Length: 359
Image 1: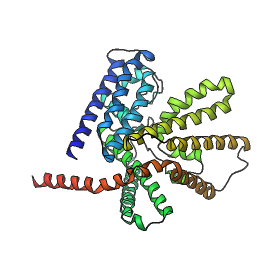
Image 2: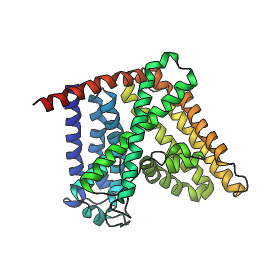
Image 3: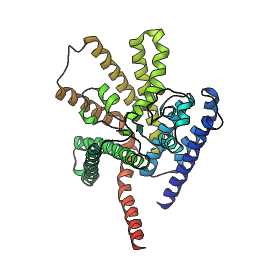
Image 4: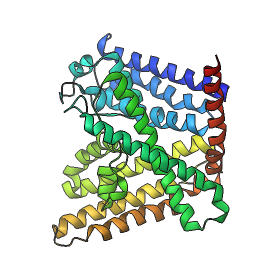
């Protein structure tokens, strides 16, 4: 555990230095956006891709892989072309994507936005106090729910498959949301940035478009929209028309998401992908595209009750996740590894906290 933490600290030290270097490209060396800046960014993208390979634990490696290999790399690619969150000013609500915006970011803000899964709210630098306490209570409740989900694994042998499916889905959702919420709370407390929530109660989704576009992991949705959906739609609109360009763009964005998940799963399992995860996202991309086209065609004349549409949406996500998303995790024992890491992690933290109080 101690060597793993040392590797973890080294990786993030390299990451912070790399973010400083990336900012210097526009602020100090005045490398113009486009291919010239991209050439200077590519070594950092390679570095962010290989650094997490030295981590073996899920709870340190998982967030590092997600933050650096996926989000940071995509943000830097966008930054190379003066697009994305690194090319806007999170303080003054300036939406012009140019070098002046990058230059107006402080170094700490640039590092945080580049390396962490935060979505800056440009309209309000800080949240009202009542909303703050409401958010704290919600996170506390979800932490308790997360602890309950972990405890349920003690009874895995006695659980029917459908309850195990529900527990896996809850574990995935709560684990990701709690992790992102804790990171956002630290950034908000230290830098005073107003941040949008990463999740918007996805279990209340009434359609696939609502689930993926407005409720689930909104930072990833924004990045994919800027880096994949918008360019693809812009290229295909003159060729196939706006409606079909939208369909192509959506399927392309979901496919890229699937490929990135395959890469993340490779870091966890270190075995060749079987492409089930990619097909999970391709399937959802196609279904979401069909849903959007049908909604546009019927013009709101056919609308299911929220209870029915919500149940169908969450049920479809859960069943397809069990069919295509989770098998690679279960087949390679990642779920067992994750569960077995919890007591080790808690024991390590408890031991060092006791040591600190003793001294």
